[in-house]
Image (tube, rainbow, N blue to C red):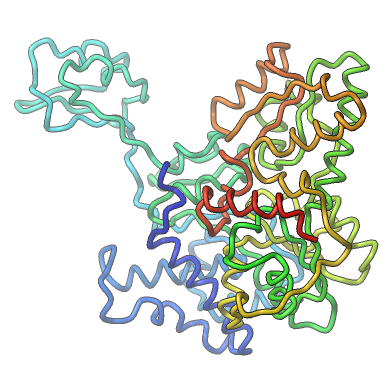
Amino acid sequence: RGNMFVDNRMTYLKREVMAAVASLFFENKLKEEINRIPTKIIPRNSVSHRCCVEKDREIIRQRVIASLGFGLEDEKLVDESLLSDFAEKALDRISPDEQILSFIDEACKACVRVNYYVTEVCRNCVAKPCITNCPKGAISSDEKKANIDSSKCVNCGLCLKMCPYHAIVYVPVPCEEACPAGAISKNASGKEEIDYNKCIHCGKCIRACPFGAVVEKSQIVEVLKSLTGSGKTTALIAPAIAGQFPFSMKQLSAGLREIGFDYVVEVALGADITAETEAEEFIERMASGDSIMGTSCCPAYVEAVKKHAKAFQKYVSHAKTPMSYTASMTREKFPDAVNVFIGPCIAKRHEGLRDDNVDYVITFEELGALFIAKGIDVSSCGESDFDLGYASPQGRNFPVSGGVAAAVKKILEDKGKGAELIPAYINGFNKKSISLLNIYASGKSPGNLIEVMSCEGGCICGPGVIANPKFAANKLKEYVDSKED
C-alpha cells in the first residue's frame, strides 16, 4: 500500500486508453477507429504480461468499454459487442450510469481464497500446533508439510500465531484488503464482486489492485460532447489540482479554455462557504449541548456513516461540500452552462450524480488525458484569470489533512471563539475508522470537531490523482502561501 502512488504499468495503460478515446473523439473518428485501440496499444510483437497478447488486448478492450462509461457485468453483451457498438451507445446516451465501478473478470487473477498459506519453511513438526489449534479442522499434514483446506478455513489467523517456525504467512487480497467497508468479496467462481449496499465509492480498490481489474465508469464522453457542442461548459477545479501539473494555476486556467471550457472556477470558493457554514453550525451545536460535530466535505466518509456508522450520522455537519456550493454559484451565474467538476475523487462522481447543479465529474487523470488528446502543452500557454474571483488561503488548503478543521478554526478565532474548538482527526478511512466513529458518537471523542478524510493525507492522495502526494502537498502549500489572485 505504501507504493500505491508509484508509477506503474497499469497507471500508464489506464491513461493511454483514456487519451486514445479522447483523441478519436476530437478527430471525429470514435466510431470508425475505436476497434483498433487494443491492437495499437498492444502491438503484435509485444511481450505478454499474461498468457498471451490476445488476452492483453481483451483486457484493454474492456478498459475501453469502461472508459466509454459502461459496466462489464453483462458478460454476453461485453463478449458479443464491438467497441464501435459501445461508442455509438455512449454518443447517444442521455445520462451516465449510476454505478461508478466495475470489474474486468479477465484481469482479475482470482486471488487466493484463503488469506493464510503454509510455505516450504514448514518442518512438519511433531507438535503440530497449527492443526491442534485450528477451530475448523481446516489443517492437515502430508509427509512433507501442513496444508490448509480452503473450503474450511475461516481466516482466523490462529495457525499463523501458533507456528513456531513462522512457516505460515498472511497473503492479502489487495482489493478486499483496501476496502474500508467490506464491500468486495469473491463470488462462486472466485472472482471479485462489489456489494453496492456496502460500497462507499472511495476508490481505494482501484489503487490497490495490481492487475488493474477494478475500473471506474468514466463520464469523459459526456464531457467531450459538452466541450464540442454548441452550449457553454464550466470547469469547476478542485483545489487539490494545484500540485498535479507542472504549470501555474493561471496557465491551467488558460489550458482548460483551450480544451474548450468557457468558464473556469476554483472550487476553493465553495470551500470558503463550507468553512463558514460549519463554523456557524459548530457554535450552534455546542450551545445546544452537542459534544461533537463531524465535518461534511468527504463524500466517501459521509456515505460510510450512512451505511456503516449510523450512530455518528446525527453529528455530521449539515453544510454542503465545496463542490456543491461552487456548482450552485456557477449555475446561478451561468445558468445555461454544463458544470464539470474536475478533482481527485471517485466518490465525487457518486455525489455529482445526486446533485442537480453538477452535470459531470472527471478526475485529474482524465483531465491529463484530455490535454494529451488535444495536443495542448499547458506550460506553453499564456495565463488566464479564474471566473468568479479567487478563494482564501484557508479554502485552498482544504485538500490536505487538517485543512478543513484549520479553516473552521480560523473563522471561529475571528469571531473570538477559537478556544472552544478542539479538533480530532481521522486521517485515512479504513475498517477501524468505522468503529472509531461509533465510539466517538458514544461520547468518547478526543475532540469536539471531527475532521474525517477518506484518503490518508487528504484529497491530494485520492484515487484520481497524477502527482506523488508529497510533491503535490509542497506545491499546494506554495499556492496557498502565494495568495495568488
